[in-house]
Image (tube, rainbow, N blue to C red; front, side):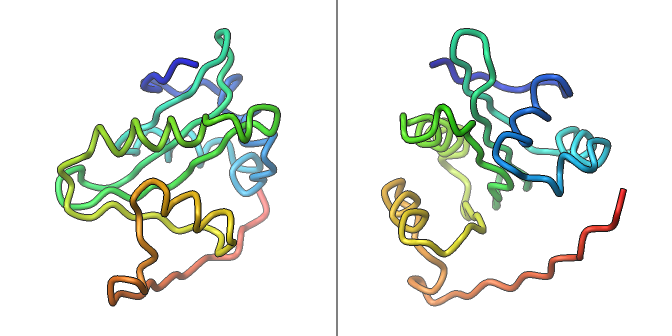
Length: 139
């Protein structure tokens, strides 16, 4: 596996990955996703034999805060260390950032995965999180 920076938007490469994991809020709005990538702090891709099989995308200022916006791995490549490799690469790139954040499903597997990477649930450090999610508009 090779981890490399995604320097430009490639619809034919990125949209099928989002589709494979069922993230239809993005795939139904490819222009929104392309704009989101263009405005991202960093996007890293995991490649197997030249094929994009996973990616991590971060937003933030890169100094005081980095938010992991997307971490996804094609179902055929899950449970092989791809997500871990992507997260380690991102954590390494922003090792000196004060706050490294993400919002994810509250499942035992997700919590265990992120804890294994050195992250702590916000409640564990006396914090809480607040979220507003706008209902998706029809394209």
